Image: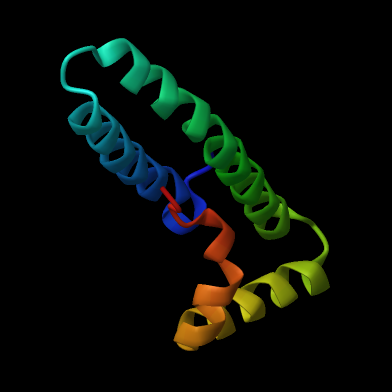
Length: 95
């Protein structure tokens, strides 16, 4: 996970929330709770790593145009809440 966009930190917080929910739902035996958490986490975890890598590739490219477009896109997305929600909706928790 690259340090760009805070994806690692946000994913860690999401992990904690999901694991907590699973443990509360299965208080008598933690093994199924941990297994359910791991199954779900693999999907969004690998997606987060791919998104982080795409961001890193855009920021470290030698192509000044691609780098500028990436910065422009993130600036625009960061300033328009509806666009931000739409762009990152696949990274949300649906459990």
